[in-house]
Length: 243
Ligand SMILES: Nc1ncnc2c1ncn2[C@@H]1O[C@H](COP(=O)(O)OP(=O)(O)OP(=O)(O)O)[C@@H](O)[C@H]1O
Ligand SMILES: [Mg+2]
Figure 1 (spheres, rainbow, N blue to C red):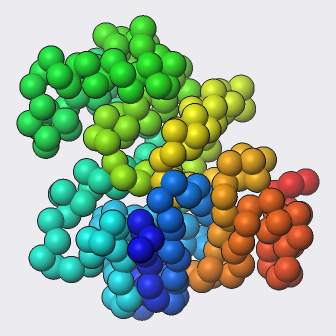
Figure 2 (cartoon, protein in one colour):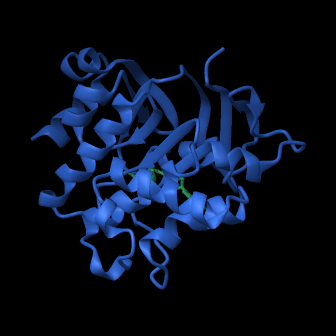
Protein backbone atom coordinates (compact mmCIF):
# COMPACT_ATOMS: atom_id res chain seq x y z
CA UNK A 1 0.00 0.00 0.00
CA UNK A 2 1.29 3.45 -0.86
CA UNK A 3 1.31 6.10 1.85
CA UNK A 4 -0.67 8.52 -0.33
CA UNK A 5 -3.11 7.14 -2.88
CA UNK A 6 -4.89 9.48 -5.24
CA UNK A 7 -7.28 7.72 -7.56
CA UNK A 8 -9.12 9.42 -10.39
CA UNK A 9 -9.91 12.66 -8.60
CA UNK A 10 -11.83 15.51 -10.12
CA UNK A 11 -12.26 18.92 -8.62
CA UNK A 12 -14.32 21.83 -9.88
CA UNK A 13 -14.91 25.36 -8.74
CA UNK A 14 -18.44 26.02 -9.94
CA UNK A 15 -18.48 25.02 -13.58
CA UNK A 16 -14.70 25.18 -13.98
CA UNK A 17 -12.97 21.84 -13.65
CA UNK A 18 -9.47 22.36 -12.32
CA UNK A 19 -8.44 18.74 -11.62
CA UNK A 20 -9.33 16.09 -14.19
CA UNK A 21 -8.99 12.41 -13.36
CA UNK A 22 -5.74 12.81 -11.43
CA UNK A 23 -4.15 9.63 -10.07
CA UNK A 24 -0.91 9.44 -8.11
CA UNK A 25 0.52 6.91 -5.67
CA UNK A 26 3.31 7.97 -3.36
CA UNK A 27 5.36 5.50 -1.35
CA UNK A 28 6.68 6.14 2.13
CA UNK A 29 9.89 8.18 1.95
CA UNK A 30 9.33 9.39 -1.60
CA UNK A 31 10.01 13.02 -2.51
CA UNK A 32 7.72 14.07 -5.33
CA UNK A 33 8.25 17.40 -7.05
CA UNK A 34 5.15 18.84 -8.72
CA UNK A 35 5.82 21.29 -11.51
CA UNK A 36 3.64 23.05 -14.07
CA UNK A 37 2.40 26.38 -15.33
CA UNK A 38 0.44 28.84 -13.24
CA UNK A 39 -3.16 27.65 -12.98
CA UNK A 40 -2.42 24.03 -13.84
CA UNK A 41 -3.88 22.81 -10.54
CA UNK A 42 -0.76 22.19 -8.41
CA UNK A 43 -1.91 24.01 -5.27
CA UNK A 44 -5.42 22.65 -5.63
CA UNK A 45 -4.08 19.11 -5.64
CA UNK A 46 -2.12 19.73 -2.42
CA UNK A 47 -5.14 21.30 -0.77
CA UNK A 48 -7.26 18.29 -1.69
CA UNK A 49 -4.72 15.90 -0.14
CA UNK A 50 -5.14 17.33 3.33
CA UNK A 51 -8.85 17.86 2.97
CA UNK A 52 -8.82 21.65 2.67
CA UNK A 53 -10.83 21.30 -0.55
CA UNK A 54 -13.60 18.77 -1.23
CA UNK A 55 -13.41 16.71 -4.41
CA UNK A 56 -16.28 15.72 -6.67
CA UNK A 57 -15.03 12.35 -7.88
CA UNK A 58 -12.37 9.79 -7.11
CA UNK A 59 -10.68 9.12 -3.81
CA UNK A 60 -7.65 10.14 -1.78
CA UNK A 61 -6.24 8.19 1.12
CA UNK A 62 -3.33 8.88 3.43
CA UNK A 63 -1.93 5.87 5.26
CA UNK A 64 -5.19 4.07 4.59
CA UNK A 65 -7.43 6.89 5.86
CA UNK A 66 -9.89 8.16 3.26
CA UNK A 67 -9.68 11.94 3.06
CA UNK A 68 -13.03 12.33 1.31
CA UNK A 69 -15.04 10.05 3.57
CA UNK A 70 -17.50 12.07 5.68
CA UNK A 71 -16.71 9.79 8.65
CA UNK A 72 -13.02 10.78 8.55
CA UNK A 73 -11.88 13.11 11.30
CA UNK A 74 -10.23 15.81 9.19
CA UNK A 75 -8.65 17.44 12.19
CA UNK A 76 -6.83 14.21 12.99
CA UNK A 77 -5.89 13.73 9.34
CA UNK A 78 -4.35 17.20 9.20
CA UNK A 79 -2.09 16.31 12.11
CA UNK A 80 -0.59 13.66 9.87
CA UNK A 81 -0.42 15.77 6.72
CA UNK A 82 1.65 18.89 7.30
CA UNK A 83 1.36 21.74 4.82
CA UNK A 84 3.66 24.73 4.42
CA UNK A 85 2.73 27.60 2.14
CA UNK A 86 4.57 30.31 0.28
CA UNK A 87 3.65 32.89 2.91
CA UNK A 88 5.00 31.84 6.26
CA UNK A 89 1.78 32.37 8.21
CA UNK A 90 3.49 32.62 11.58
CA UNK A 91 1.47 34.34 14.30
CA UNK A 92 3.26 37.70 14.64
CA UNK A 93 2.28 38.23 18.27
CA UNK A 94 3.65 34.84 19.40
CA UNK A 95 7.27 33.88 19.99
CA UNK A 96 8.89 31.25 17.82
CA UNK A 97 8.48 28.77 20.67
CA UNK A 98 4.78 29.58 21.07
CA UNK A 99 4.21 29.43 17.31
CA UNK A 100 5.64 25.93 17.30
CA UNK A 101 4.09 24.61 20.51
CA UNK A 102 0.58 25.99 19.98
CA UNK A 103 -0.81 23.08 17.96
CA UNK A 104 0.99 20.33 19.91
CA UNK A 105 -0.38 21.78 23.16
CA UNK A 106 -3.90 22.48 21.96
CA UNK A 107 -4.46 19.62 19.54
CA UNK A 108 -2.18 16.93 20.93
CA UNK A 109 -2.54 18.01 24.58
CA UNK A 110 1.22 17.99 25.07
CA UNK A 111 2.42 19.35 28.41
CA UNK A 112 4.12 22.79 28.04
CA UNK A 113 7.56 21.46 29.02
CA UNK A 114 7.36 18.53 26.62
CA UNK A 115 6.11 20.79 23.83
CA UNK A 116 9.00 23.20 24.41
CA UNK A 117 11.46 20.33 24.20
CA UNK A 118 9.92 19.31 20.86
CA UNK A 119 10.17 22.94 19.71
CA UNK A 120 13.84 22.97 20.62
CA UNK A 121 14.43 19.73 18.73
CA UNK A 122 12.65 20.79 15.54
CA UNK A 123 14.36 24.19 15.62
CA UNK A 124 17.68 22.39 15.85
CA UNK A 125 16.72 20.43 12.74
CA UNK A 126 16.19 23.67 10.81
CA UNK A 127 19.31 25.25 12.33
CA UNK A 128 17.54 27.88 14.45
CA UNK A 129 17.69 26.60 18.00
CA UNK A 130 18.92 29.98 19.24
CA UNK A 131 15.72 31.65 17.99
CA UNK A 132 13.42 29.82 20.40
CA UNK A 133 12.35 33.03 22.14
CA UNK A 134 12.57 35.42 19.20
CA UNK A 135 9.51 36.94 17.54
CA UNK A 136 8.77 36.52 13.83
CA UNK A 137 9.47 40.21 13.13
CA UNK A 138 13.03 39.68 14.37
CA UNK A 139 13.69 37.00 11.75
CA UNK A 140 14.56 37.16 8.07
CA UNK A 141 12.09 35.74 5.55
CA UNK A 142 14.22 32.63 5.16
CA UNK A 143 14.35 32.13 8.91
CA UNK A 144 10.60 32.63 9.21
CA UNK A 145 10.04 29.99 6.57
CA UNK A 146 12.36 27.60 8.39
CA UNK A 147 10.33 28.19 11.57
CA UNK A 148 7.17 27.45 9.60
CA UNK A 149 8.73 24.15 8.49
CA UNK A 150 9.80 23.40 12.08
CA UNK A 151 6.26 24.12 13.26
CA UNK A 152 4.95 21.60 10.79
CA UNK A 153 7.58 19.01 11.83
CA UNK A 154 6.58 19.42 15.48
CA UNK A 155 3.28 17.70 14.73
CA UNK A 156 5.20 14.61 13.58
CA UNK A 157 3.35 14.34 10.27
CA UNK A 158 3.50 11.24 8.10
CA UNK A 159 3.68 13.31 4.96
CA UNK A 160 4.53 16.95 4.31
CA UNK A 161 3.19 19.15 1.55
CA UNK A 162 5.15 22.22 0.48
CA UNK A 163 3.60 24.79 -1.83
CA UNK A 164 6.29 26.98 -3.41
CA UNK A 165 7.88 27.60 -0.04
CA UNK A 166 10.77 29.56 -1.52
CA UNK A 167 8.83 31.70 -4.00
CA UNK A 168 8.36 34.68 -1.69
CA UNK A 169 12.04 34.78 -0.74
CA UNK A 170 14.94 36.75 -2.10
CA UNK A 171 17.28 34.47 -4.03
CA UNK A 172 19.97 34.60 -1.35
CA UNK A 173 17.50 33.27 1.23
CA UNK A 174 16.17 30.50 -0.99
CA UNK A 175 19.27 28.35 -0.53
CA UNK A 176 18.96 28.08 3.24
CA UNK A 177 15.35 26.93 2.98
CA UNK A 178 16.20 24.40 0.26
CA UNK A 179 18.94 23.08 2.52
CA UNK A 180 16.37 22.47 5.25
CA UNK A 181 14.06 20.72 2.79
CA UNK A 182 16.99 18.58 1.70
CA UNK A 183 17.79 17.49 5.24
CA UNK A 184 14.11 16.74 5.97
CA UNK A 185 14.05 14.63 2.81
CA UNK A 186 17.20 12.80 3.88
CA UNK A 187 15.62 11.99 7.23
CA UNK A 188 13.14 9.92 5.25
CA UNK A 189 10.12 12.23 5.30
CA UNK A 190 7.56 11.61 2.57
CA UNK A 191 7.26 14.93 0.76
CA UNK A 192 5.19 16.39 -2.03
CA UNK A 193 6.48 19.76 -3.08
CA UNK A 194 5.28 22.20 -5.64
CA UNK A 195 8.39 23.99 -6.77
CA UNK A 196 9.98 26.15 -9.41
CA UNK A 197 13.41 25.03 -8.27
CA UNK A 198 14.26 22.59 -11.04
CA UNK A 199 17.74 21.95 -9.68
CA UNK A 200 16.27 20.92 -6.37
CA UNK A 201 13.68 18.73 -8.08
CA UNK A 202 16.39 17.02 -10.04
CA UNK A 203 18.63 16.34 -7.06
CA UNK A 204 16.11 15.44 -4.36
CA UNK A 205 12.91 14.53 -6.10
CA UNK A 206 12.65 10.79 -6.53
CA UNK A 207 9.91 11.66 -8.98
CA UNK A 208 8.71 14.64 -10.96
CA UNK A 209 5.05 15.16 -11.80
CA UNK A 210 4.24 17.70 -14.49
CA UNK A 211 0.72 19.10 -14.33
CA UNK A 212 -0.91 20.68 -17.33
CA UNK A 213 -4.49 21.94 -17.54
CA UNK A 214 -5.62 19.99 -14.49
CA UNK A 215 -4.09 16.67 -15.47
CA UNK A 216 -0.87 14.84 -14.78
CA UNK A 217 0.57 15.24 -18.22
CA UNK A 218 3.92 13.55 -17.72
CA UNK A 219 5.70 11.96 -14.79
CA UNK A 220 8.66 9.79 -14.03
CA UNK A 221 12.02 9.54 -12.37
CA UNK A 222 13.15 13.10 -11.72
CA UNK A 223 16.46 13.31 -13.55
CA UNK A 224 15.12 11.43 -16.58
CA UNK A 225 11.93 13.48 -16.93
CA UNK A 226 13.80 16.77 -16.65
CA UNK A 227 16.60 15.75 -19.00
CA UNK A 228 14.39 14.16 -21.64
CA UNK A 229 10.85 15.49 -21.52
CA UNK A 230 8.62 13.52 -23.87
CA UNK A 231 5.63 15.78 -24.39
CA UNK A 232 5.84 19.10 -26.22
CA UNK A 233 4.03 20.78 -23.29
CA UNK A 234 6.75 19.78 -20.82
CA UNK A 235 9.46 20.69 -23.30
CA UNK A 236 7.94 24.16 -23.66
CA UNK A 237 7.53 24.54 -19.91
CA UNK A 238 11.10 23.51 -19.16
CA UNK A 239 12.63 25.72 -21.78
CA UNK A 240 10.66 28.65 -20.34
CA UNK A 241 11.74 28.05 -16.73
CA UNK A 242 15.32 27.05 -17.44
CA UNK A 243 16.18 29.99 -19.68
N1 LIG B 1 -10.93 29.15 -4.56
C1 LIG B 1 -11.01 29.13 -5.90
N2 LIG B 1 -12.14 29.48 -6.53
C2 LIG B 1 -12.24 29.43 -7.87
N3 LIG B 1 -11.24 29.05 -8.69
C3 LIG B 1 -10.08 28.70 -8.12
C4 LIG B 1 -9.90 28.73 -6.70
N4 LIG B 1 -8.64 28.32 -6.43
C5 LIG B 1 -8.06 28.06 -7.62
N5 LIG B 1 -8.93 28.29 -8.64
C6 LIG B 1 -8.65 28.07 -10.06
O1 LIG B 1 -8.21 26.73 -10.23
C7 LIG B 1 -7.15 26.66 -11.20
C8 LIG B 1 -5.96 25.98 -10.58
O2 LIG B 1 -5.44 26.81 -9.56
P1 LIG B 1 -4.18 26.41 -8.68
O3 LIG B 1 -4.06 27.44 -7.64
O4 LIG B 1 -4.32 25.00 -8.24
O5 LIG B 1 -3.03 26.51 -9.73
P2 LIG B 1 -1.45 26.41 -9.52
O6 LIG B 1 -0.97 25.37 -10.48
O7 LIG B 1 -1.14 26.22 -8.09
O8 LIG B 1 -0.95 27.82 -10.04
P3 LIG B 1 0.25 28.79 -9.49
O9 LIG B 1 1.51 28.26 -10.09
O10 LIG B 1 -0.10 30.13 -10.03
O11 LIG B 1 0.23 28.74 -7.99
C9 LIG B 1 -6.89 28.08 -11.66
O12 LIG B 1 -7.56 28.28 -12.85
C10 LIG B 1 -7.51 28.92 -10.56
O13 LIG B 1 -7.97 30.15 -11.08
MG1 LIG C 1 -0.17 27.39 -6.67
